[in-house]
Length: 128
Image 1 (cartoon, rainbow, N blue to C red):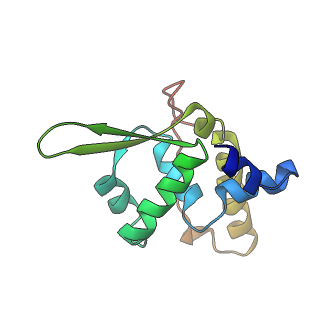
Image 2: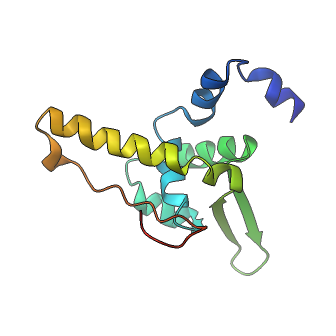
């Protein structure tokens, strides 16, 4: 973990952006906030992502402490991915980004092309 921390920027806002940057990390984490998901379920929720990139993004988020991977020793093997407590702490940030995205779309008269922001926090179990 020491090497990882050395590679991350010192400025906190830059560090935060580096950890969640990329086209898919925020989207993947958004879906993991509703509860654990298998790889196939994440692929179904984000069909535009290739399996290779999905696995890469999950591994990077695992390395940064945002995602936990649990391997179940069974036949066939099963792997679940879930947001860690640190990953869950990004919920208000992701919700704010989602709401801002809706606001932006409304300002550009494109709101009919967006979906609702639906994050159900794991800790409270209610819909936001």
